[in-house]
Length: 222
Image 1: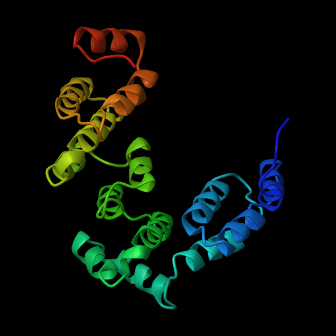
Image 2: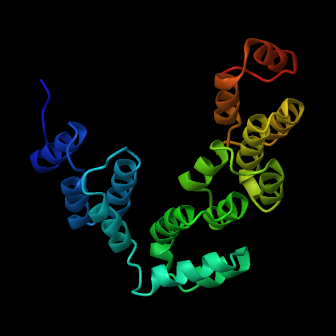
């Protein structure tokens, strides 16, 4: 027997999962101070075709990240001459507790404005890797060179950035570069960062001959 501990949340979740609007669930989570969870649900909902209440969910994302009144105007100005230095200036006065949500909300807007993928990636991971940054890589919008350069200042996360560079190389058709970067990623693994997610990404897309070549190169399967 399934026991429902939170009937109000369960009802809102079921309404959304059954094809309804995610707005009641997002609003409920936000009312409970669960802003990160609320934002995550809103972004998933907005990624679906013909999302109900899309405009209101977009407004909720802005509300949850506590954007100032002129925020969209500032982002639009940034798009005219975007750079990592300007991004740092734009974000420097954001309270630390709002950095994550504000950054994700901003990246969403900048993607709509078609800011170039490599710069957008660097903006998205300036304060640590985010799902938005990974998505840009896995959509083929980031060059391996950008990721390799970012890995130089990633500290213990080098494995992850180099693993993403391997994904980018594979998507760009550079199989030899893919193998080289996977080996590099494996060499820098730690208790916190593993190359396996990147190996899995590549092996799932690789042909039989490519997977055989990965085996011969000593790249583990998962």
